[in-house]
Length: 256
Image (cartoon, rainbow, N blue to C red; front, side):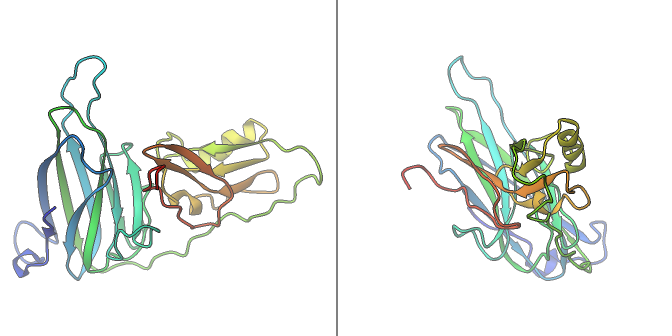
């Protein structure tokens, strides 16, 4: 894909109606047989405080038994898209149509941190494609300004006092608003306590953003483990009790 270019001098902020932000929109169509992940490069200049994305795609009617269109989305920063996730900045799959990242905050599912200059990549993931193709529209907005400090993540402790040797009740498959759940981490923790659970495993689809979202919610009565639901094109698997903040890449097929 051709890069979305904000790096030209005329694209930088200055006087005028556009103010301290610049927006570009890209349209295209993904054909049947597209790769699992298609990367849209975005050239980010210096001085960007926030990287924001919104997207839509066509959902034409299809006959019974024929797959329609479904397009997931995520983001990698200037460190690249290589397997292992060094440049990973977030994933929302099909749960959201817009997101942002900046140094001090991010949409749930995404990781706060500096918006450094370089080539970023929006990951478009065509889960299914209708016979006539998948038309998409991606809008990128860069907001310029001074970046706020990035807060240090606070992760749940890896141990709780417990009751000694005993049976413990827990749920290893838990989603919140950080992927396709509807409840905040605070609501999830309250529900876990109301259900009499001793532990839960934070297991968002393909992201670690919730690992640092549990501050003040754990206690000796509730151990909160960090993990991930590794959601691949060939199936899902739970990673339970991973090291806090550690990303498990999901861009594999079973044959790999």
